[in-house]
Amino acid sequence: MINIKSIWENQKPTGEVIIRTRIDEIPHLNCFAATNHITGQHLYIMSVSKNVVIPELKNYRFKGVEIYTLPIEPEDKIEFYIYLLDNELKVIFSLFIQNILEDIEPSVTESEAITTTLNVVSKWKKMFDKINFNGLSLEQQKGLIGELLFLNYLLNDEKTSANAVNAWTGAEMEFQAKDFTLGAVGIEIKFTSSKQPRIKVSNERQLDAENLSDLFLVLYSTEAVKDNGFSLNSLIAQTRKVISTDEERSIFNSKLQLNGYFDEDSEHYGRMYSLKKTFGFAVTSDFPKIVKNQLPLGIYDTSYSIEISAVESFIVEPENILAKV
Image (cartoon, rainbow, N blue to C red; front, side, top):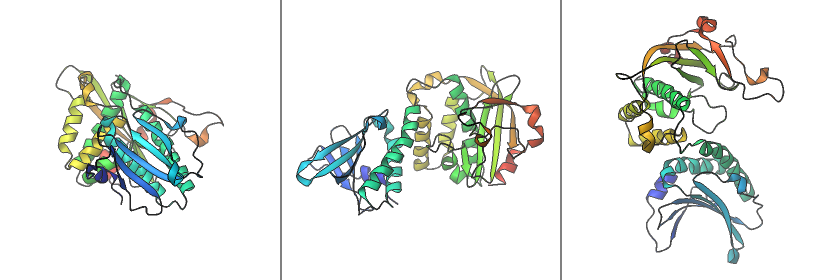
């Protein structure tokens, strides 16, 4: 497996502004991991023939990253650059470039590799554009708190602890990703502080069990408190403490950033909650829901609410969810 992060970490000054290392694991393509020696910014470079058609790149640019090409005249080459502008996003950028390398490795031609690269860029653009540098809204905070509660539940269970951070897939680029994916089991997380709890579903994909053997929904019912509760900040500190390795902690921190959480905004995330009840539901074919294949052509992003009383027959205990993993 190509470890792009390790390549960057091991690069030594060469006297050039841009230090580059060829990625030998893909010998049929000219790919390089590079670093700006002055600024410390990372780059990914692919050198291709000038005959390779590269589309207009303005629609592929996004927050914290610049994408462009440069002609290399003597060699009749074009160099395709993905340049990290914001060093705070280094961990996310490593995952992004790692994904490109894994996807282009089977490519036969340079043209195929460029097309595959731009497809990966398009997916990650959605995630980078979701990063909110102005802080999380209250609803976003609640959603993240719910996912962290379940992540800690996985971390504290011997069966799932080792894979818990990787199982947190809600912020990943795949459009259909569930909040947590454990093998073929998907889990959606909901969090409410309403006095009359209900399940709020944001779109027709959330409760769609396509490509899954089982889908579960977990609802945390809470109430806001002034003290003696948990907050987004306290859950993040607790999670970092429980995670056992530096590598997993790094992945966890990158996923927090993809969710829009940055430590410098922590002063805004002290609101506290107390857990009243945890509901678990098996989202079977009979569970009341709206999914994509039920919608008329042209209708999408359908949000709706489900009354708890309507789904009481689908309640399962959290430990029964893990029994399916």
